[in-house]
Structure formats: C-alpha cells, structure tokens
Image (cartoon, rainbow, N blue to C red):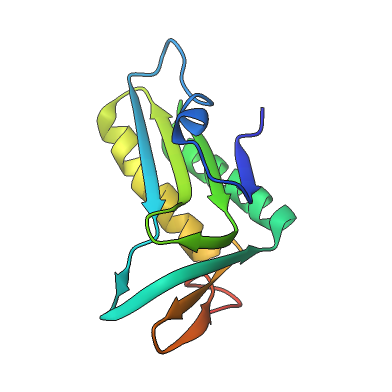
Length: 142
C-alpha cells in the first residue's frame, strides 16, 4: 500500500482515509485542502501544481517519521495532486490516525504545516490579471 503519493487524477478522500487505522486507533483526522477562489484579495481562476515526485514522496515519509517520534502510535497517509486544478478541486488529503483525538488533531496540523514547509511541490496561481509560481514556504523555493 502506498501511504504517500503524488497523483494526477482527482483524489478520493475515502481511499486515503482507508490506508490508516487499526484496533488501537481511537481517532482518524482527515485534512482536505481544496482550491479556493480568492487568496489575499486576488481572484484565482485555476492552479497548476508541479512536484519533484520522488523527493516529494520521500519527504512525506520523513514527515510521518517526525510525527511518530513526537506522537508514538500514530499513522500518516498523504496524497497530493499535481496538474491543473480548478476552484473546488481537492489538492491534498492528509490523514492522521492516533490513539486519541487530541494527539490526532495536533499531529494533523503538524503534518500539513510540514508538507507546506518542506515538500518540493510548487503551484502556479493563475489570476484574473496574471500568474505567479509559488514554492513551499521554506527552503530553496519561496
């Protein structure tokens, strides 16, 4: 089973959620990131995502290791879509399974924050009046 994926087709959140769980899990916390129409007052028409796929998948796995070190007995699955995405499309699904909800919520927020910080995924925001490539928030692209 692939716990970390970069895909070109629409993401089915139920398929990502089904990758985690078990008898000692009391909370499954999904995060579903969608393409919104307005960002910082600008109207988005659509987004284009690109990724350095092998490194992106490995970095997602590294995030899972960080989470397990911080919150033992957790599981993580992440899927990010690349290509053209329209308003309302699902761009990312991140799911944390944990023994308790408080750990699940904390680990879920950590997972998506780390994805945005370190995973080599870039998006081109296409607006009414132009476009711009935007990389992850830390590291080699800003």
